[in-house]
Amino acid sequence: MNNAPITYPVIAIDGPAASGKSTVGRLLAEELDFLFLDTGFMYRAVTLAGLRAGIDLRDETAVTALSAQLNLDVQPAGKNEDGRHYTALLNGEDVTWALRTPEIDANVSLVSSYPGVRQEMVKRQRAFGQRGQVVMVGRDIGTVVMPDAPLKLYITASAAERARRRWRDRQQQGHAASFEEILADVKRRDDIDSHREVSPLRPADDAIIIDTTGHTVADIVADIIKKLSVIREP
Image 1 (cartoon, rainbow, N blue to C red):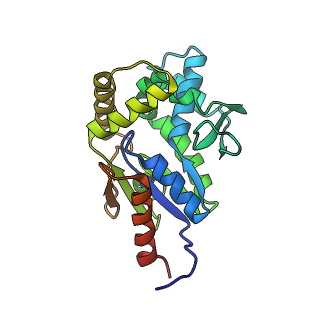
Image 2 (tube, rainbow, N blue to C red; image 1 turned 180 degrees about the vertical axis):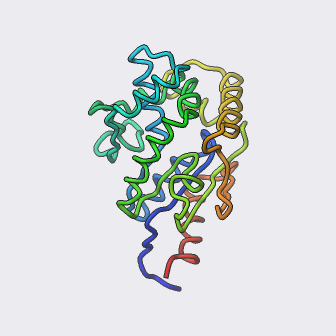
């Protein structure tokens, strides 16, 4: 077996909400000593900024203009022990958990459907990708942001499984919501993300599809590492 270091410039991971792609991506990045970038934080940050500014999120022109003005950055979780996967910064402010509220969940698919917003965020995401050795997670990484990525993964799970995961997260964060409400929201977001005109959610033609339903994150990451050892770049 070839034991040379894995040198993929970008590993692209896509998938629907609560599929486990962010957790898998983070652990994979740790295993490979790669940068981890969950691109969804950018759209969530635009959503949060719009809500804070009192902008009508149905106003595509206003939201698009706002997205170009924001200073967005992501840093490792560092010494934070609150369960975060990374630290998300909006204009220098730590908004990691402010991005994970039901209000953001309810509005982020609309904001991310705007072509101008996506164009601005894709430009920033590609700049991250150019650093090399990055695990990039999102909805359109393999199809739009980094179509030339040598390894593309599409991580999914049943709607019920994804709703259960999100319900458990909500309980831990102190947000009251029923499983039925969260399941309905998961299905609603799937429909919006899959049918938007710009960069719809779908697996890249050459993506490896991984269903996480009933599997542990550790097993999934171990399986991906095995795949990498077989198809690593020369």
